[in-house]
Length: 140
Image (tube, rainbow, N blue to C red; front, side):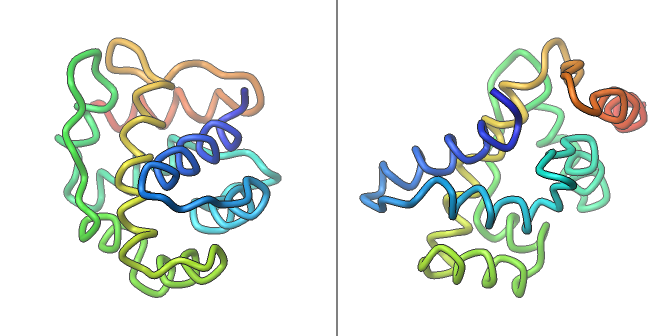
């Protein structure tokens, strides 16, 4: 499963727990725009860099490690992406901004965690060299 499919699945599952049923294609499109997916490929290294510049590095490190994942709040998600970006994402899915931010807060730690091991992002097919390089820079 590629990263975008995994992100879509995780977000859809999280929202399903809240009683919201979403179309996977719409979720994938909205996530691609929000997360800046290039050619359908999600770059976790860029996301990790964004977390680092957003003063959320220690939290993100917990997602990379093999232990428990520190939670990210909906407010932190809005700070990370910007309120207008989260509002646009929510609008594409017919959600209010708070529900969309909660869903992203539930999805992001799992997405990073499931694609990392021992404190490093996994080397994945399809542009993964950038992931490893970005993770190495992030971890220094």
